[in-house]
Image (cartoon, rainbow, N blue to C red; front, side, top):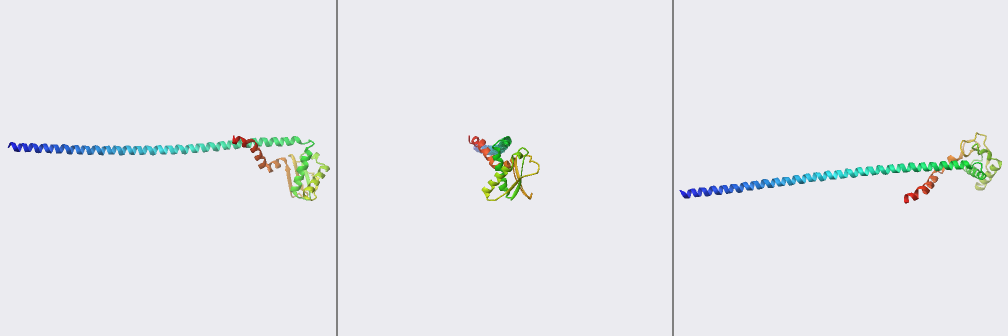
Length: 215
């Protein structure tokens, strides 16, 4: 009887030991699974955070590029406006300077050059010459004769020139109109400057801005 009791106690002890081991194994497995899930969660959170940081960085860079591009564009616009303003001021001064030359002895040569250029450009056999009110008194037969001689020397053809009976021009310079009235060559100062605007602007730009931009 005592032997049975011992065997029963031993069996119960073995069952309890197995139960404890099974419980420990289950607990360990549960803890491992919980640790894995926590690690997975941590990695997922870190991945989400990394994605968020990357997106934020990309957006910040895009905004930065947009702002810099807009700033550069605005700087260029302001620079162009400033250059246009400076060039306009210089060209206005040139026009005023040319206007002040009217009446000088050397201005006669200027008028002859403008009329010669206009006569050659017009290409008519005969033309009428008109100028501003302050310039017309300077255009006499002697000046017209000199223009005809210069045209002959440069082109080999004859051209008839006479002072126009039309009202004086509003701007400085000359206009030659063919005798038939169909064509004309405008050599007034504003038109001449517009005609050579590209060269004038390039000259002003090279003098005023090129060296500054290289500095």
